[in-house]
Image 1: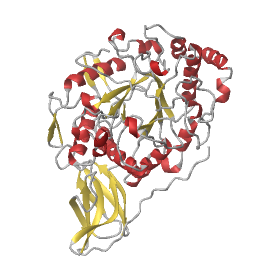
Image 2: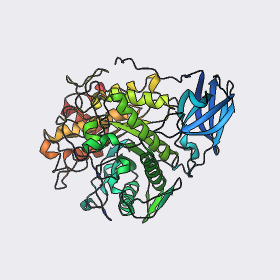
Image 3: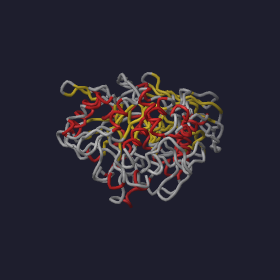
Image 4: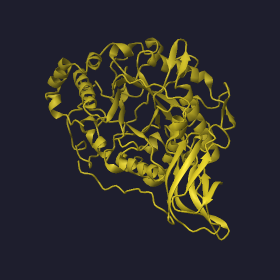
Length: 526
């Protein structure tokens, strides 16, 4: 964002207190020397690697090399050999939860040439980690309308969410909050990790209170400067302390293993964790915040968008496999801001970033990633969500995307190269939206109704989470952003009742009258 905004994070101790497309490069499975890996799948207790094509080998064998995420074959372990032949297939033990685990490995077919192994295929990760999940927790799917809850003690744990009809919320987890812990040891793949269970218990409380009101929870995982060093990408070291959040580290064993452990720990715990009569349950994990806006929100000095996306994709892949291998029903999202069709200082356009990210993921085994998108107005201080302007157009060339033209994003994801492994269009969660009341409470109220109406009329949008329940006087209000449904004295604005009844035909009519346009007439259903 060009105007610094506050991401609602849980700062807790033992208790909570306070439409023409650009051409996109096609990524296909190519055989380097005649061999192509077509799939790497968990089947029971094994990993099965299917190939096609033929390559010559001095010893008459194909060697399956399992590399770590930060390695490239032939670096890695030679885990299986089969006769070199067309249609060769490998099977190796998955060994989940042990030092020999294959869950995070990248597989490549190599052959012996002049006394050493040489890769002759593409490289691919496991693409169905959910097949080894210990649990597939029932999802909380009660509706799209969501709200970033006020977690202060005055609100006593979001008691108002049910009253407002909010069905979704986000909880931001800065990795420093669970780093350097000394709580109950967590043993993963033969190593012992200690996460800060004092903070974790506070999150159990927060998430449990949301769940008790029928609210689906999405956790946003972000890496702050105070996180333990293993989490932080080395390309971020030159900027530590100067940015809000930093890129995650999958560049070495310490980083990749720690990411895998924390993803596994959180997904397992929050698949179902009983807490004082409540259930702490998380359906969705969002990896990073507005990661295309790299300078502010996911700092890595990586150079090109392709290099940056490759770094992010490696960490995303590790966390995806960790999360899905514990709770098969959890969904995992990447996250971008609203800058779409162009890049400028410190921000890659979301379209460019998603293209590079998707190309990298598909080239190494397609997985069911989703998109968390922040379709704020441009400028942020405008509450007029229902009209285009010079920067917000229904075109793939638009500079910015708001709810008015969110169909630009869902149409983009409907292209063949972006379709998920299940054959579906990847869903979009509008995980952070805000409209200021500083230009009038009526305009804010109308904007909220329009945004919810848009989300309800786009089948590819799986949620819209408004920011926020209560005004933030410290960071946002000095910038002209009074986005709360409540003011700082807990008094309801017009937006409170409009949000509460946003799907009512009467409220939609009232909001349309405020805007001077029939909202139903300007929708772009999908």
